[in-house]
Image 1 (cartoon, helix red, strand yellow):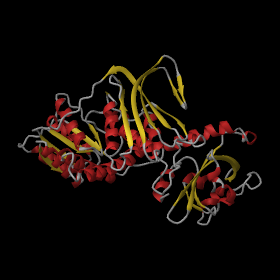
Image 2: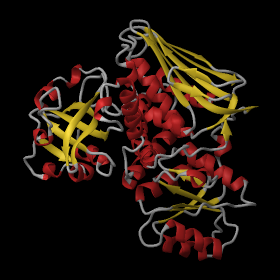
Image 3: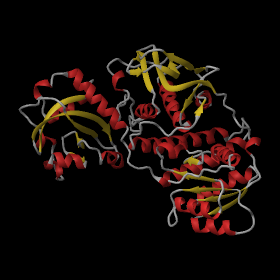
Length: 506
């Protein structure tokens, strides 16, 4: 684990530390130092806080046997600042270029010493704590990272719309787009986890089928997977659900990626969407569904399946059965976070040697929305747009996309320059697109100035931060990173509703 990855747990309320195979403490967060003052030195050992007479293993045996422990947790008595204390310990091994490391998280046990053997209750508590940990993995999202991804996605998606299907560069550009999508997944989802939101920033009710179609089409185009058959069975009259388009796409891409990787040779992946109406509460595996309407998406594969002792752990952060340093064990933890933040649930059933089925449930409304996919011509325009951002690559990308679709484009690197352009008599500005986070005059201050000097001016605000709740659902807000289609569609929608402009102010 890289140092910056462990830093995600620096502000965790529970002790977390990284040790090597000899039990030497390499890193520890603030809660750990506060709970165990003896671990603050450069040569601290796990043995210095070990209650040797109470634990059944020595620290060395504990570390050596961790991968054999199918439950992933164990009760330990440790020497804390307030005396010996029982902790529920979660240990995750990982490898660096040189040697094996262990991430040890310690959750205070809510029980007396006599209740240590109450394994089901302890396992349930530890499982909940680890899943909650998945929602707190990140404390900040890099704005620079989001700006770079916006430039990559914008230019790539624009070029892809112009290339013929058999163009020799198309496969390479799809790989660039795939890499940028992965980066967007990391930046935005970890940012959402840090706020532990009860609901993901969601748009108005929409049809989930187009998102599924894009995900299936994406994997169908991946070279080298001709042996995998794809079956897409959408419900033609699917209920309407509230969801964040980008986040839901990322969740389904991750599930589909796991399905593909589970098929060693030839096989089949089936994607189905259907409506579910429940008259009474229902249990599907670990998911408790209250009565009501749901959209259910089931993704099934004919792969190797999941062993029964591994299945309960698949949503744990940092747990993975995949080999190699590139697998962080965060994929399904992200899926869990995205779906539960939308108020839904994820149920998984599997049989070794037969395959796996993942069922995603999202709360829905009992009406039908037929999604209209705008053509390139429908996204064209002739209006004059002012784009404001302190990143040159964003300005260049926006200018290229908008001018290519018929818009007249002006750009400004800061709020002062934007106000100067707006003060000119010609050309008249029809719409402003501004970043919210800029040095000097912030985007919020610029919006306030524009609303005072030019009442009724349509304004679109963009940001790499994941804004919670109402702000993120504002129709005039565009989350970075965005594609060329996202930008063009948002401009069309805002211009169409410009009679009643609603610029988001954060």
